Image (cartoon, rainbow over the protein chains, first blue to last red):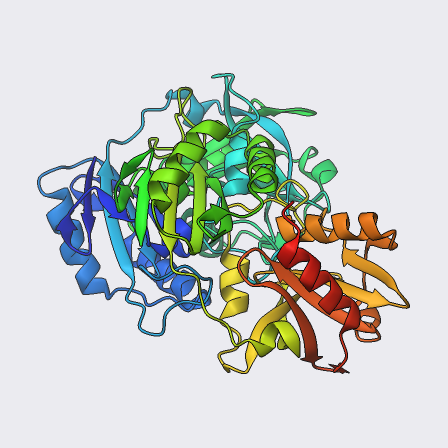
Length: 271
Length: 271
């Protein structure tokens, strides 16, 4: 893995880094493919919006693009992670007045997933951990990710590709590392993420697909019982793209025509 | 500030440190006074319990005591922070199978507070941020502290010493960096921290005082409206000890006999 910190190659951070002390920062995970970071404008807009929600200074787009080209060099495929924090400071929750943030970009190899994950689909574990509600942090990809860590520790069977997270009220929210959609009678639905969860860029792209195709797509509360009656369920994130769900406790599906259509569009549409 | 990482002087951590990536760790803040870390057995027990709740390996007591004596040396007063994380790992919420944790101890100067804070008391800001419920993380002093950071950013008047946090249901939970008690008709009450908040060592010591004195002390849900009718309110933490509350919106108190008695006991009882 290669890392640039504030533009310079470096693999350590200060022990006074607020990203470490308090998780005081945000991040993005992007796919590098064909020497190009995919869907950059959407990722940068989301980074800026997440920074704004936490009153963090967001690095300029041109600064990050310079970093990106130095980081990736001749590498054509991989995963880029961009982290923006409030920088270093003395002990204490209150940020120093003159806090200058830290920007950290790292490049790692793209993980390889079995091909059938994107085709016949994946099996989900239903997580026992329920996401708590915190509207001030909901939707943001921040560095406070203990809920995801605890959820990811719930299973280790290689046959299970992802975990399904509900909130404390029993509504479907997301996968541990992905967003979720259900298809019912030709309509799409995706969970409301205003109380918890992370609103990813690929979720937005599915909304864009639905709009372009004139397909009804609603953001709403989805009880687990309703998800289990879906015609199709699928997951999206920026690293693995779209995975149909073939199985989760109480649900089984072998036919994914809508998910496959959206998958192909997501894989080829440049926006 | 001096820092020991896994026993060695160092002021940086790896960019692959899970404490930084996900806030995957816990910490303790202790007072060094007269060359001795105060209330060590209670702090170690709480550290071990917090580690256990997150399935983190807790360093042995003797290892930490060796670190402590090397860290503090001849220094007699200060603040020691102990952080224990899940250590380094590749990108991904799932911890690596063979994760060896990181232990980090740092020593900094003890902050100086105006003397009247512990005597006539402090003024509180009522935070707009409400704590979300997450029973799996409640009570634990973990590294996911964005709620505290956002709350601490709500005020910057030097006359306001601390912020009061309620939960999403409107119950009183804690100060941004302290635990809270109310006194009413000779009885103590402190908020139930099973859904959110951090259960500190000084809170336990107040429970011990009450037990020793035969004073009724209840852990329960306290609506804000009830707190405002208290005879006395006070805050405790390991750095500043006990502070009576003289003012918060809707509350004013100039007489703190119970708080002063407990303050004196906390300052002198060795346990």
